[in-house]
Length: 181
Image (cartoon, rainbow, N blue to C red; front, side, top):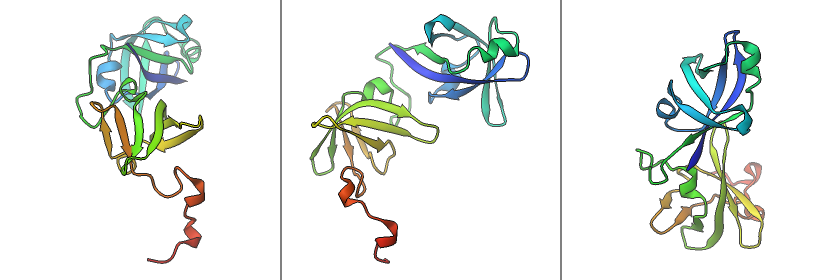
């Protein structure tokens, strides 16, 4: 099975390094020197990581055969894809691969059906579960412990505790209208 582990950003310097937006909780494993990664678009790969280092909080990679800024810039926005055993699970029990979450039923704590996870959107500061509701509409649910307290892979469901307004905009609380506590 294939897993997107990073997206290539801009070139860094003149020796072929690129910044990468990491999309894995295991970058030391997936983005290590010597790793061979498929790409999207596929015409730019496969790419073999020659070196990796952290600079100013950003991961920088250099790929074999990419020797200058022009070559590095040509890779911009390419997705890096690792081949992963479908039976493999993250070491941390609180972490999940996308393929484990896709198609899970989503229910509230009281058992009300919300829908089914259609995809996961990886944003810089948090992930979002994109849930397709029974009526065909979609709702975006921040994938944080306060809102998604339980993922039960055995039961194939995600339990959510949505704040007012997340599922029904008419129930949203406007900060200026709240009573002082």
